[in-house]
Amino acid sequence: MATTSAVPLKPGPLHPLIVPILHNAGQLQYRSGKIEEAIVTYTEALAQARALYGHFHVAVGATLNSLGVLHYHLSSDLSSKAMELFQEALEIRRAALGLEHADVATTLNNMGRIHVQRDEFDAALGYYEDALRIRKACLGYDKTESRPSRCSLYPLQYWIVSSATGELRRGH
Image (tube, rainbow, N blue to C red; front, side):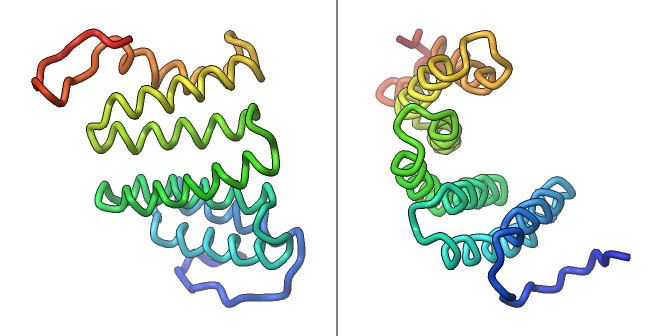
């Protein structure tokens, strides 16, 4: 029977099946509110993925994106760390998958969320627009997978807080 104690994982043998198992474990930890444990698990997945595949591989980009999400949810004080992780994930995903891939859109959407968290609404809008454009091109407007970008973009697009005046104004 599996144990639920938080024992840090020791680096084990490298094998391609280890990374997705670590992702699954990290996802379960995250969903049960154990974000710090999930960060440890995804950090091990990142080390495994880099050792197996090198720097510019989709598994590395996916793991960095997941770590960014965890840091985003752990604390708004960690938004700089989350943004660093998303930046690296974006660079890898663009290199490995191309500029117009749905996974690139996911990372752009996540970067927009960081800017909203920081009250940088104009910057967030740019990321959300890019994410939505890519998702619509890859998946179509009516697909469920394009909904996260639309749901992030539209309220922000309608009302943006002007940093100069503090007043609400209509977006682009």
